[in-house]
Every structure is written in C-alpha cells, then in structure tokens.
Amino acid sequence: MKTLAILFSLCGSLAGSPIPDFPFIYVKGHASVEIPTSLVTIGFDLAKHSKTAAEGESALSDASKAAKQALRDLGVKDKEIHATEILKRQEFGEFPRFSGKEEPPDPSPLPPPDGPAESAGSGKKEVYFTFRQEFVLKITDLKLYPALARHLMRSGEVARYDVVFSATNRDEVIEKLRKAAFADAKRAARNIAEASGETLGRIHSASEMPYSDLGQLVGESSGMELMSAGASASDEVYVVPPTVSESFSVNVLFRLEPGTEPAPPANR
Image (tube, rainbow, N blue to C red; front, side):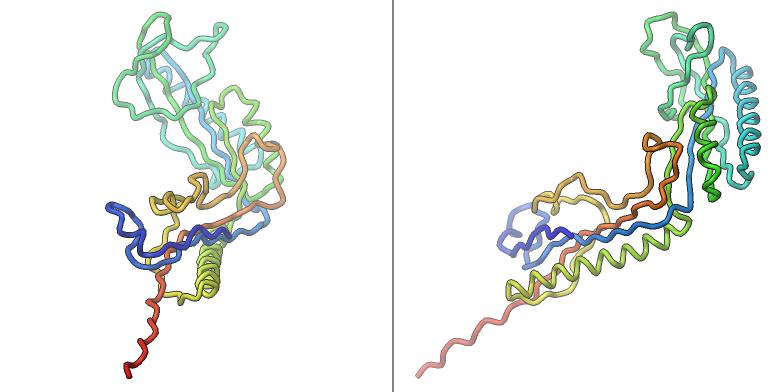
C-alpha cells in the first residue's frame, strides 16, 4: 500500500485546482492475490485479401470452416468457440503479394468499413478487398492448451494470436479485492490521522481509475494500473502457469473532522 499525501485546506484556494478547500487525507488502497489458473482465453483472427468481394468472402468462409473443424479435432467444444461475423473492408493500393502467394495479413484491427483507404505502398494502385473474422476461445480444460497454441501459432491462416490466463471465478475474486482495497485505504488514512493528531472523517470521493488530476498534483505516478490479470502470448506460450496474479487499487479522499480550538483563558 502506498500513501500518496496528506494535504490541508490552504492548498485548495488555488483557482481551478482539483484540491478540495477543506482538510483531507488522500491515499491509495491496494489488494492482490495469487489464484489457481482455471481458464484460458485465446483470441485470433483469420484474414484474406482478394481482387473481388465474392472471391474473398468465399475464401474466408472456407478458412473459417476449416479452422472450426481443426479446433474440434483438438478437443474444443462448439460452445467454447465464439466467432464474429465476417468483416469486409475495401482498400486502395498495391495488392498484397509475397513470393507469388498472399502476403500475411496486417494483424492490426480494421477501421470501420467507411470506404476505400489510401495505401502507403509505392506499387500499382488498385482496388481490392480484405475480409477478417475474429475468434475467441474460452477453454477450461487446460490440458488442451499446448496443442491449441502450437496449432494456431504455426498456422499460416492466423493473422493475430493472443492469450490470457485467468480463473473462472475472476469476477468473484475482483469483488473481494475491491473490498480489501477500500479497507486498506481506510486503514492507511486512519493511521495517518492518528499519527498527526487529527480525526478521520467520512469518504469525500473515491475512484477506481488508475490516475486523476488530484493524483498528478500529489505526485502519483501515471503508470499505475487498476487491475492486472493473465499473461501475453510471448510468455511461455505453450505452458499454462499454475497461478495468475489479480490485483485491485482504489484512490480515496477522506475528510478530516474539524478540530476543536482550546477555549481562551477567562478574563479576571
């Protein structure tokens, strides 16, 4: 847990400042846990380029059917395969070629199909079509993962591949971490208030966002994350980690109760 700052009302008089004009304590609460891996989520794309729309749609449809059958053969159930509709994009530029074959498709997300896009290539300009379909696999039978990863990463049909390791009860875990993070923030704020001779009041504001204007003013790093989970495809891609880390952070601003000024001595 990192305590960010304790600031008083004098700073709040700055025009346009997000700092309140009353005494307060601003802290960050954090909670984390290691949980057993029980879910693998794999995302990948299939993509095809073609000179005509009909040809491209047919080619991607065939590739999609073949991919689904290969997944079934590897033990994936139909209910674990989630595919989008085929996305079509008309482009203008040099038709992708690579050694007489189609060049591997660009793995970047396609923008909305709002008309031809100018290509940066220096070759012959022509109109062609790109078709793409996105797949998401949610696998709970973890022993299937190594063979699936090898098949998809070595397939010439796959344009993009990523994987996240998590748990089937992740939502429940996050709710527990949220409560623990708020408890951590309150504990830290109370410790600061007691150490400084102040009385901690109620929460004035709280945010689960990782960054804020107030956080910037009190020196909070913009590199913090709200949650963390899973692993990327570059990390031991054929191995399922036994556990995954989950974490949650909150930024909380507590009011300080007004102090009681000592009574002036009686006149004699």
